[in-house]
Image 1 (spheres, rainbow, N blue to C red):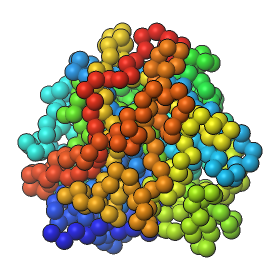
Image 2: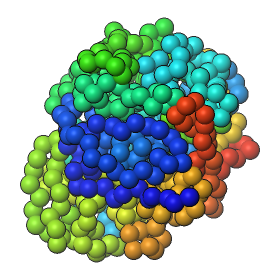
Image 3: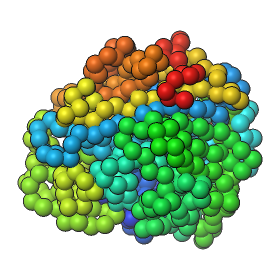
Image 4: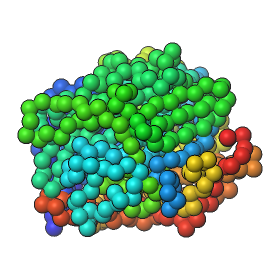
Length: 554
């Protein structure tokens, strides 16, 4: 079989501009899985544009088949498994937010900030959405393992969406142009991604709707102090220009704050609550029709785009290898994720300030500061001048996932105990479930979707060329790939992410923690299935870092 590797993104495709490509049909087959980009008309899209690699979007399997070109998000994750009823829809985490180095001398060699390493970290869960892929059933029973169905057995899966409770680091270009809430504080949003596609018939939604919301679309709402969205969350009514987070409404959290996250289903949909234990403030959001959340009506033969008010409920009762979103690259249900690969420096000629979209890094510039002195290339896009920053004055690019694996995320400048040069790590607990949040998740897995992002070298149909340490543009292994470790804080175990952090109790053999290639089944046109390698995964038989039942984190 001749494999056509995914083409490198053009500048147009990679920007965060509100210009979309009408999606090509998602026909998962040996012939189409590595399909070359074909010309598609450009259309105006007012919603979050997942076709441009927006970091707020879920990583889809075989993105070049959805969008007609590669769209990636490198997402090393920790997965949590439990067979206890409710573990797939009701849980509580605790975490401590990173603290950042001084904003002075931001271009000092090897200095880094959280926004340079990752645009967000998030806590996830699979949701029901009867207007989303695979479009075979008109109902979805919430909070039920009756929804478990392997595409290798049947395409008749209930419609699926994926929820991410995303937290955004401070210090750089403000949302909705960039990553940050403001110069010094964190904020959070409840996002739910859906996919308008029928993999059995090969039909996508109608052209009018694709032009407005895209084929992958997002409900987006900041967690607010009163639980009322700042602006309409549903993708039909969404307006990015209205989404600069308002500190009078949106919960802002300080660096170093200790926070408890509770997520549970209600009669009106999933409710997420952040309790800042340091300041006493809280924010919450319920994914309800009353709050403006909605489905995009799947009407492939229609001519309009309709929002259907909808209460989004969790899909599964438990969390296991079988409770997955079958259109996503990741294999997980309950998961913690650090999204990486969305920042690189642009050193040289000044970049113009273009709100929401940014521009490209001028040719002939140098990307990187100390480790990487390569000339700018086609992935240095959605760039902003230092003057656009809310605090840390550097010129940088926030475009799609770094296909060259040479940006800041792939340098050893992650948390390592040197707080003069690097931020501290997020410290987060394993989740607890049960009606009183006192039941442990008894198994853990590590996963990364590197095969899905290594489009230049990896054949996801066979696994050939898929490497655990990604390869840079020049064919050498990436300089660094971050990893999870455990740490004792106040006598309790926490997870951390980054480099070698002093005091860590287990780093699970660093990058080897991500295990081996994972083969998953996906529905293809006609209703059959095909297997592909989109991830590396290792499952541990126990949870080496059980959650807190009492500590400073609760």
